[in-house]
Length: 179
Image (cartoon, rainbow, N blue to C red; front, side, top):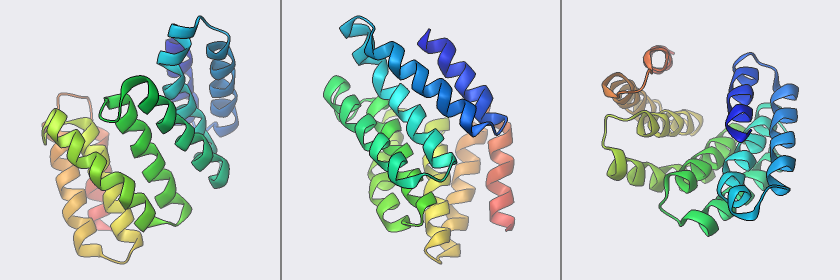
């Protein structure tokens, strides 16, 4: 059921249905909290991350940060600090902080996560490309367009070279370079 919730959440979010994506995330968390312990603990970090991202999309930044910090703590406790689930939760937290208008705090999360993602997957990976993209947004917010352009270009390259279907992400990265 959590995998179905994940797909439904993605579809609602992609359609711009923030309230629906939040409702889906909250129902999934409730289901996981009543699931057998080992099943719930393994899936709860991702569910918390979905709720935190939905709250960020709704510009409810305080709640988003709280939820994403809970996702990071839960993932770290269950998987360890260098597991992909923990890194992705930290990446969402960094991205949320940038969106909130705290780019330096966001970079404090995003930069070490980026190094770990590159070590895990190499430069040609969707996850690393997303990290570069989010860091570029942070540098743009900090008033450093040269660094932002450099990172958007690196992100486009990572997306283009990855095995993931990331064609639209390449376009977004170059659109930001143009901006």
